[in-house]
Length: 97
Image (cartoon, rainbow, N blue to C red):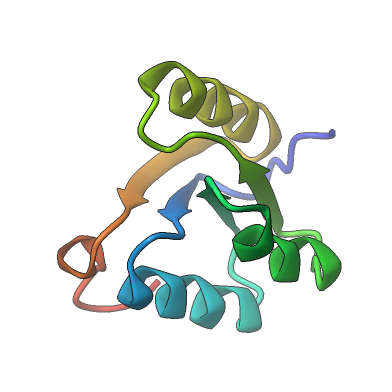
């Protein structure tokens, strides 16, 4: 994967909570760079099939700190800094990116 040098940071959205999933789809539809991760392949599949070149999608055990850390390393190689991790509705920024 080549690193996109025009992006300063990306959110990592954990596809567990319905509000976080909706937020990820909103960013995806607007071509805003993001990364998504889920323990379920079916949750990340739509982001892989419709990949817009601005999305990294991972299947990993989101409750395993080592697997989550490895995903973050890969994301940062591709996009740059992971600026936030969004897992629950409370993690969603008040003003979307």
